Length: 629
Image: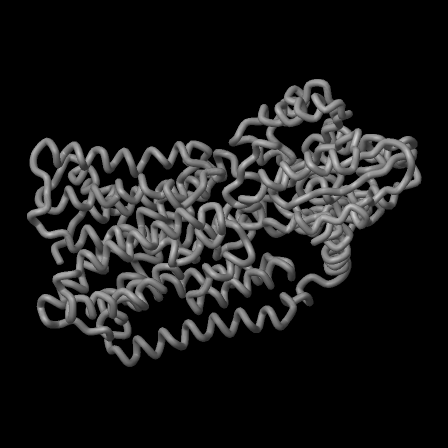
């Protein structure tokens, strides 16, 4: 295969947006599409190599996997060793258990399945998962289990139908991805069947005959169009963009165009991509991809702050430094056969390494996250803030974590305050549900009837659409039906309102207006305190077991002011002002945590919040008034 420096340069256009996106540079809000660029490049290179070997009569499955092992495993082992050491030193037991499970998934190339079941790519919990990025490695390795045999079989038996077979597979995978964009968005993001078309698009470029090519100005224009298609999504896409599906077409087609147009002769784009700095970054891109995300996670974990400009520079510098070490002293010796030159030794070491990390993951899980490293109050605090809190939200009956469950809502079971007076519906997402324990505890001070209707990830905005939660519009539409059925006269809206930022805070106004047009009394609870990381971690690092402790919230300035402006005619409550005042926000009081993760109240915190600022409470304890002092 002829070496193409522009393809290495194209790798730099993949890794740099990923690095800057993960480092927190807001301009690169769609930097995650760099993975899709990598997929197309990978499909092109692998298919080209296999077909060249088939044409020369030297194709061997053993040789193929030897190349894959030399290319992938050494740098992966290096990263896993460093990341596991850091996790054991830094992580609390709960985080270490989660890390250990992902370590097992990474070592068995099933990490994408683990993250599909346990985390969305853009969820807050993802920021504490140092191996989250290995989902893409798992997808590629699963692809490599199928593609060599498939290409050999097509070459051997139906070579004339090679293009047709590939196109059928590509179109089927793409159609499935489009379908799953709404039906199963998390599976769509993480799993091979809905990602295979991206790799197959690279394969398509590899098998196109040389005569299928543009010339001159048309070829240059196509290359420039490809560059634009690949780069524009980097700045236009956000975490609310339905992805992959149709939205993945521009970066993937753009990458395919740049590879295709540069085959016969270098275009201007190919010359640009062949510049030495871009080629150099492309050559270390694999190691850079592996090391950068753990650095982001551990820096967040130790600083407890969102990355500012100085932290962004530090992340980039450390990532490049560690990637250069990995490339020079780990990748190169194995790829050049300077180390483990024989196949038996290579395959034996590979199996031992993968097995060792898998066993380490299982052992850390079985140990309970090595709790002996953190004796005393923090272990008790973590236990206090998990099961009790989530069960008190009336999961599966009044609070729904899975799409389309809201049909199970039970009016009798979800009447959480049963006094006379106004008929009130508490409507929202988990940041409405976390008031339920407090409402039940403070029921004597609330002379009304309150029903809870809540679903994870669904702010109470009628027009709200989430590709991660496709049922939100139906869930919110059903709320209007419940209002009529229960003869509701007062509605309390509460949510993780930061999720409206990319869609527009003003979208709340239409829902408030629709409720007021029905003659309803409307109360809007603004964004409650959010921290950059889970509060038990902050508490362990900063409070030293103190009964009272505070920390800076991670909220955009004036968010609640914008929400109040978007709620004309409604009664508005600012939880941050009520709980935190002008300074850091209390997260620990009377020796108990007020939050169990980065923003959800514990049962104790819920009682404090309801007593302090929840609408419709007739009498407020004196203790609540002093919370922000």
